[in-house]
Amino acid sequence: MNEFLEKMGGMAHMPKAIRVEVFYDAKLQEITGVASEPVTMNEGATFGYLLKNIFMAHPEMMETYPPGTLGIAINGYSPKTYSPMLDGDRVLFTTH
Image 1 (cartoon, rainbow, N blue to C red):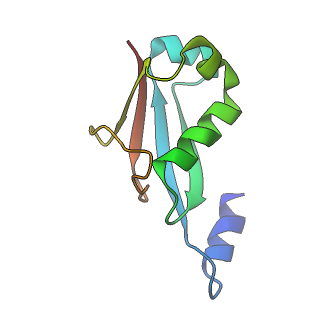
Image 2 (image 1 turned 90 degrees about the vertical axis):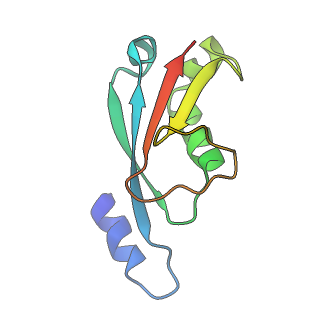
């Protein structure tokens, strides 16, 4: 899939693919089954888009931890919904 997205990003008028790494604390690892996972997105995608995709992939996270109960940081900073995601960003999800 990543190879496909990279080829598409090289075509004229196609957004470049970026890769971010998403990390989960111990409690969230019980839900997701992984300590971390790579996410490939289009350049220009926002944190809100990433969040939506994380909750779609792991709906139990949203069911167990309603809005406002998760700590989230991108490269150590609190994101806004419209924060742009950049290639190589590190996103950490924690429980309070």
